[in-house]
Amino acid sequence: MAWLSSPASAQARVETTGDYLQRMDVDGDGRVSLEEYLAWMSYAFDAMDANGDGVLDPAEQPGGTGKAITRSEHLARLTARFRRQDANRDGFLSAKELAAPPQ
Image (cartoon, rainbow, N blue to C red; front, side, top):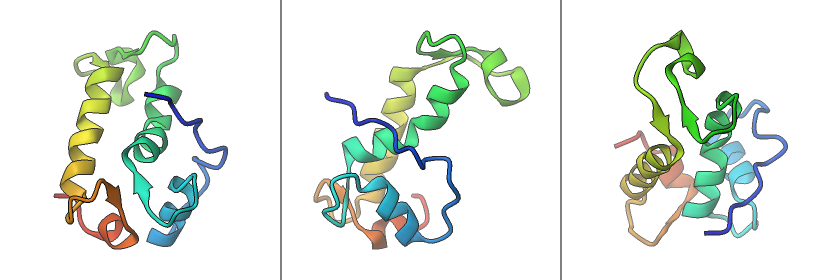
């Protein structure tokens, strides 16, 4: 899978669903693909992975405790969350689906 580069403004403040859609929707088609979602949602993992080994060790996580989380595990969780949010099962998230409470 080709990875999209993280948006430069990923850490900028977003206040509305439209803000999320606009920043996540890299190709500007008005919807968010799984690839776009994973790229947006992974910036925090990448920022916390201080040694760049693809694993968040407990010391790299908030609070410094917990079990290690691999990038693969993180992406699997995000993929499952995306699929739950994709209410119409079209493989994309619309603004309405992004605004819906997590399921």
